[in-house]
Image (cartoon, rainbow, N blue to C red; front, side):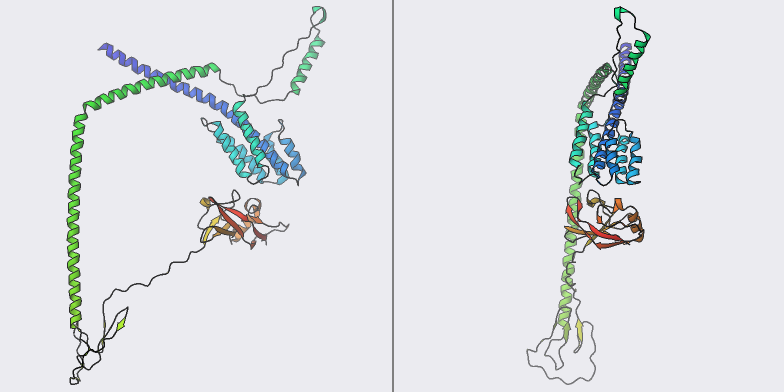
Length: 469
């Protein structure tokens, strides 16, 4: 008995130690890998930013400052923190170029430890591709970005080269003089100053640590597999002992359920038969009432008075006498109305169900949607709204067959003023307009723009023509 208790205690302590070792090794491995991945990710994102802004600035042929900044931004000594200020000097505050540079730099905050760097680099490249869609230099830019991504995933981190000390040999094996040593030191200092300064990478983890972690992880996985096998064998053994009782109980439950289902189905069938018989009796009663009413109505040709006219919602028919009318004395008394019997000269209305006139199908109407500003050279269908709000700039009118559409500016003075102030971001991609020096507060649409359906978006086919008033 003591030996059994000792074995149980030993196994419990062993499992606890293995679990603690697995947890610590996983934590150490994850932390070290995350630090190295974060350094590589930040460095590559900076390269993406430099290269993209260089293409954007070089494509601007109107301003000489943009070409100068394009050459400066790719230099290793250039500080990227100074880039937003330099862009503002050329294009002003909140320009598209500045926003693009800030968005690329913000990708550093989206780093996720444990997620493959390939997917995270792909997200940054997709951001640049979506922002520069339609630009002539996009293909060349994308090619360079992919090359940078592949280089970051394959090449090791570059370290600062350590210069080899140079030993001056004095003639006749004598100790060099102090002036000679100072000259050698100056040469080494000049060599260091001429070499490019590279960023110092974070301290890495020795390779043997990864080997140790891999061994501990493999041992922990193997022990966990053994534990699962033992539990499954125990569970299987216990289920075999209880199998007959479980089978009997399940068969009894199935028979009870089938019996209740048959009883419910039989009750429903009897109820439906009773309802069917009741409907037949009511129908026969209605037919008898109709025949009684028809028998009590006077037949045409029995007296000289004109026959009764029977009208309903569908037709008005009068009977023609088929036999010679009987001559009877004129009765001066007014006819007495008898319930259920029609008197001559009166109109009897039958209770006939009126059928509603056939309604013509409604003609398809134009669908109106609203959007804030175009994205990816068009309006994404999933982002369109059915009603206008304070962010809606464009009003989109879709044809009934939903293959063509036109767009214009929402008629709202407050939205006009906001759109004019942010025309570079909200109006430039979808509208043609001229800018004057005077201040404007309203937008006048000269000609609406046209759209074409392309997949899940309405792409701009022709821009709208507007002017500021």
